[in-house]
Each structure stands twice: as structure tokens, then as C-alpha cells.
Image (cartoon, rainbow, N blue to C red; front, side, top):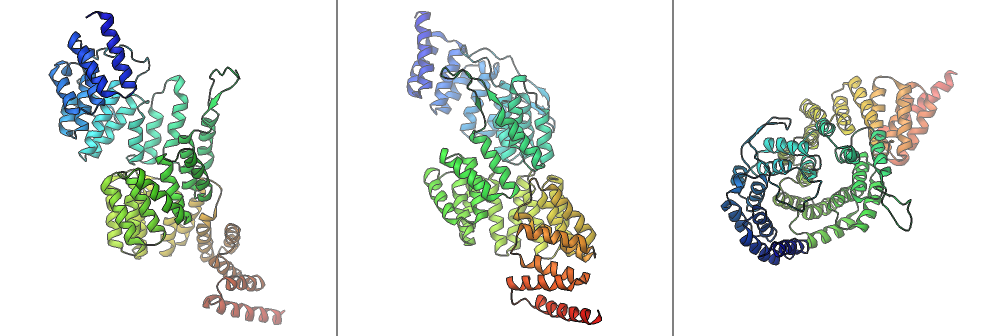
Length: 541
């Protein structure tokens, strides 16, 4: 057969693959390989078989070629076949021996020369060794060796920062702490034209930095433009300002800040544009839970179960709906189903534990949280929730130990400092409580919202107990600005004025507290005391 005819058939195979006509691609690739016996054509045939889901046949073809032991691309494709067949030990054997340190640096690697098999390949390709490292990580994770998986994922993204899947596994599976994520991103070697990617990756990791730092990252990306020639408007340029992935990151940030209404409005708009953007869907579900939008959760759950019945997210949505309407037994059932579909889906494991905690079933709740803490060492929330359970049972010393452990994993989450303040307050260590509550407010990533009103009130309570009345009054008034319908704030403010000897102000705020809770015995008794004290004060004058 003429070389021109063979080249034409190669073109036909590539075209069939691009049009997803895999049976046709397999048919013509087989004939080209038979005519030429060229390793590149054998590789093309194996690719066609792989895309057509003939994994065992593709592996047999590659293994029989003998080139599989001399060429990385053959070896990688053969390992991908074994991955699809779930033969993880064989997959690792196919990829060869290699050693790695805890930071993802390769110590020794017995690689071979990579032949140029893709004659029409692009100039910019993912480095083959990066793809191999990533596949090693997936194999180790499937074998539940998460330590090795972590190291190989780090090696993959270090070998080539364009290997986004490796970074995605590290972030989504919470394998790294906050500091480790920042350290990894800063260690990546980006090319000069990929500066935008470095900023984008920085937006993907945990967002507990100060608000101005996070928001500056978003602004930097939103102003990043790509000048693409537009014949109707030569000055036209594209930016990432309306990119759904970037806006989903911003929604995550709003959720972490406690700005739930703002987050819900953003995710609702994004899901109108792309109804099945799963990362945005997860944030939307979490926000709807916080806001108590049970109807929205019901609709989302129905749509997800219909479209993605095999995804953990779908059944997690069902669990969220039942949790929202306080049917905790049903919610646990669906959270459990979500974890059975995907054991690495952290939200379902946390939901399962919180459903137990909502019914004060502490042992089962802590069992769920301990499992989550073991599987997701980079996430501080399971450890934080264990501490909350210990605090609920008045085991304050144990609770403090777990809160400090959560702080070590994520030293910039204000919720951790808040819980440390609460446990110190319960142990009557008021100076320490004030310190923790002040650190909480210092770590709030954006302007104070109503979510942080209890922290401000707690700080005021602790200051009152230290007899720092003027400071306590300032924080009580700050709390009233955040939420004007909090009984405890008015009661605390009234009592502080009473202790300070300002009986007129005390009477005013006792009345406001009793307007919110007319049957409160403490305020009723203290109002009587304040009136008596005011009368005595008038007589003395």
C-alpha cells in the first residue's frame, strides 16, 4: 500500500476519534497497524481500543508489542487500561519502580526514552512523567495507601503545574493543611505566560486568609485579559470575570465568610447558566441548608437523583433536604448512601456525624467524625466537631485538646478560635477567653455579619466578668448593631450597666430584654433590684 494511502487512513482514524466513532477508528487503526507494524500505529490502534472501552484487548495489544517495556507512552496507556479494569497492583507494576520523599520529590526513577509516537501532537503537552505520577497516586489511593497517594499527587503537579487533576485530588480530598497548600502552590514552577494559572490555583485552595488578601486574588484574575482578534471590534478582549469556575470559587469564599445570602444569590445565578456545574451545586446545597431553604433543597435533590443517580452528591442533596426539615434518621440514611458511593466525599461524612449530633447521639457522631479525621487529614472540621461533642458533654479539657489540634491544621479559621474562647469561658478562664474571642474577630475574613454576633456577645460577657465594664458595654452595643433581636445581648448589657451603677440605663435595657422574653426570671428579678437601687440613689441625692 502506498504511503499516501496509509497517511490518509491515519487521518481517517484521527477524524473518527474526534467524531467519537470509535468502532470505525478501531477498524481502520487495525488495518494501518497491520500494513506498517510501526510502533506509532500500534499505539494509535491501542488508543482507539481504549476509547472504545475495549480495555482488556488494548492492554493485550500493548503488552504483546514488547515496546511497552521500552517506551513510557506504551507503559502509561497499558497502566490506564489496568486502571479501568480496577487491577491496581498490576497497574503499579506496569508503571515501574520509583521512590519518592514526603515532599513529592523523586529520589530515583527508572524511566526510559519516550519515543515520538504522536506525529501531529501539540507543541504544549502535559509532561508524560506527570501523568504517570498522577496515575500512581490514583492507584495508591484506590489501595487505601493515602500517604503514598499524597506524595505522588504532589509529585505530579510539581512535575507539570498544568496537571490540574493532581491538584484537584489534593484539594477536594483534603489531603493538605492550609499551610501545606500555600507552600505547594508557591513551589510550582509556572512559565511566564502561565502567571494567571498561579493566581487561579491560589483561589482554589482554602480561603481563610484575611478578606482583603482573598479579594485581591479574585480582582487580579478578573482583570486578567486575553486579547483575541475580533473583526467587528479590534480592541475587544476577553477576561475571566464571568468564568463559572472562578465565580464558584468566589461563592465558596462567601460561604466560608458566613455571607450566606450573598453566596446563595451568586450560586443561583451560576446554576441558571450551567445547571450541572457540580462544584457550584455543592456550595449551593450547603448555603440553602444554612438559610433553611427546604423547597430549594427538595428541587435540587430531585434533579440530581434523576440526572446523576450514581453520584454521591445526588444522595447528599437528599440527605441535606431531610436534615433541613429535621428528619435526622432519613438524612443519615442518605448521607450513608452517599459515602458508600464515594468514600472520599467529605460533606456526606460530616453530614452523617452532624445528623447524629443533632439527636445528641454523641458516640455515633464522634465515630463518624473520627473516620472523617482519619481519611481527610488536611481538613480541620472533623477534629473541630469532635471537640464540640466533648464540650456538649462538659468534657472541657478534652474539647480544648481537639480545638487546639484543629487550630494546628487550619490556624486561620475564626470558628476554631471562637470554640477555644467558649471552652475557656466555661472553664472560668476569662482572660484566656477574651484573648481567644479577640483573635476570632481578628481572623474574620470580611466585615462582621450577623453570624459573628454570638462571638461579640461572648467577648462582652468575658470582659464583664473581668470587671472591664466600659469595654464590655462597647461590645454589647456592637452586637446589637449586628442583631437587634438578641435577648442575651440586652440582658448582658443591662446587667453590666447595673454592676457599673448606671441604674437608669440598666432599667432601660432590662425592659428591652423583657420585651423579647417576658417570662425571664433573671431579668425580672434584676429589674426589680435596679428600680430599688435607683430609688435609693434618688433618696440619697
